[in-house]
Image 1 (cartoon, rainbow, N blue to C red):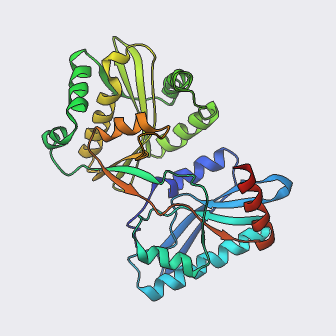
Image 2 (image 1 turned 60 degrees about the vertical axis):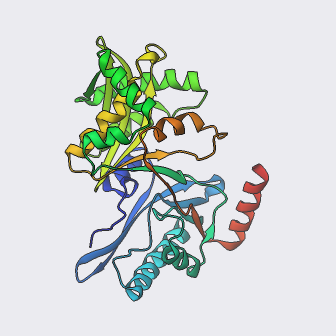
Image 3 (image 1 turned 30 degrees about the vertical axis):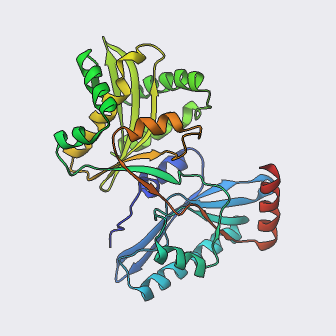
Amino acid sequence: MARPDAHFLQSWAWGEFHEALGHKIWRLAVEDDSEIINQLLIIKMPLPLGQSILYSPRGNLVNKKLSAHAQQQSTKLLIDEIKKIGERERSILFRIDPGAFVGDSVTASLYRSQSFKRSRKNIQPKHSLILNLSPSEETLLGRMKPKTRYNIRLAAKHGTEIKRADSPDQISIFINLTRETAGRDKFKPHPVKYYKTQFEVLNKAGVQELFIAYHQTKPIAAILVNTFGNIATYVHGASSNESRNLMAPHLLQFAAILKSKDKGITTYDFWGYHPSPNHPWAGISRFKQGFSPQPVEYIGMLELPLNSLLYKLYTWVDWLKN
C-alpha cells in the first residue's frame, strides 16, 4: 500500500546517501499479507560519550490509508523495533518530523498517545510553499507576481540558457557557485563531500537533477531539484556574484517547474521559507513567494524519549546552550 505522503527524505536513495557518508541507517517495514503497509528510514546521529539520537526525516508512523486499528498495530510494531534499536545503539531519544500539516488532529493524537513530545527545534523546515502544477503553463505564469513574471522574461530575453547536467562532474559547477553565494550571503555551506556524494547517489537513482543557467557559455546560477513520487522539491540553489541583473534564478525555477510538469509531477515544493518579514530567510522567502505557491505549516519535530534520565539531562543541557 503506497504511502500518500511519500518524501524523498524517506527514499531508498536517501538512505544510500547517508550510508555513503558513513552513517548507520535502518529501513523498517510493516507487512500485512506480504504487502508493505508502513515503512520508515532511520538514521543514527552520534553524540559524545558513545550516546546517540535516532532520527527519521519526514518519516511518519501514521498511514492514513489504514483503519484506526491497523494504524495502532503498525505504529506499535515500529515503535517496539525503534526501542530495540535504541537500546543497542545507546540512543537517548528518537526524533521524527512527519509530513503532516498543522490541524491534522488524527496524526497529532496518535503521536500523543505514544508519549511523543514536541521538540524545541526543527531539523527540516516547519514552513514550506507548495505549487500545484495542474494548471497550464500560461495559467502558472499568470498567477505569479508581476515582478517574478517580468524577471523570468528578462532572463530569457538576455539569452540566459538553462541546461540539465548530464555528468556527475558538473556538480563542481554548483559547488563553486555555492561558495560565491555563501560568501555573499554570510552562511556556511555543507562540506564539498556532502554535495558530491548526494548528487552522485541521488542522480544515479533518478531522484536528483542539477539545472544550470548559462550566459554566453558561463554558468551563473544552478539549482538542485529532487523528485520522488508526485513531488518535485527545490532543495539547494546558488548564483554567481556576476550577472545578477540577468535574474537567472527566476528562469531556473520556472524551467524546473515546467520540466516537472512535463514528467507528470503534480506538486512543486519550494522547501523552506519563513512567513515573518524579519526572519533571516526573508529574502529567499520573497523570491519563492513570487511564484504564488500555497503556504503550508508542518506539525514540527517530535521526540520519543528512549532513556528517560539521559533525555532529561540532554534537554536541560540543550536548553542552557540556547
